[in-house]
Length: 296
Image 1 (spheres, rainbow, N blue to C red):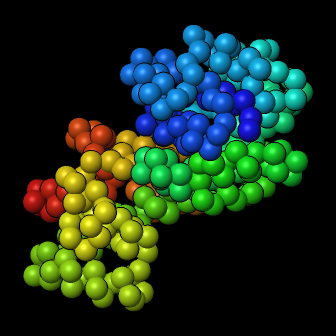
Image 2 (tube, rainbow, N blue to C red):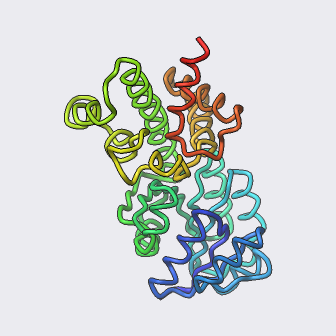
Image 3 (cartoon, helix red, strand yellow):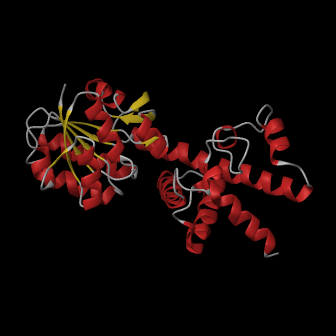
């Protein structure tokens, strides 16, 4: 079992660190938020006073942070304190350029690195059923995989540095677009007098089938575990979906790709957040669409 440092013990990082403890690893954590530190400590994570203290003696360093600037900043701060031969893993969802910058910082300091953003939300983090999309060379990925397997059920090597972030951004652009499409269909069905269950029974077994419908249905009833049955408590907050859609559009602009539906999805979620619903599960976008219909 490894000595693991885990920086970023929030809604996702906290449960992930706890699962590493359950797997028998010795985990030392750090977070700026007192409540996050206390929750992690209750799960058996040893809490360090600073990020630099957290990584001392660790064989693996994991970060789970809000944005690229935070990852680059923290890695710049801690790399001088990381033990020789340690593996750096970033599980944040950030822009590809920052991920590659973090890889470069690690390489310059003599460390192997993997970018390994996740899919599966808070529920997946707690249940250790996350999907990890990893970028890095073969040797670094092979070293990271056993650690990631303690926190997830599917680990995919997507390519070299930054490839994990590229996969995450593309995947979540699909998710944002599809959730809007599914929500529009249910909102239209309501206007046409079609029951939620009838539409679900048809679409879930025909050409309209997708994850946003069958696993995360945006109306209560058909999928009992979806946030729609719990007043749209996240889950995966709309603000986080907006963050990922913005990353997709930044990436599309930089790469010269045309993503008109991705751009429109970003605009719709931006309006939802501006209306004060950033903390609502992203499937709650159906209520925004209903409100748009009412304003016509």
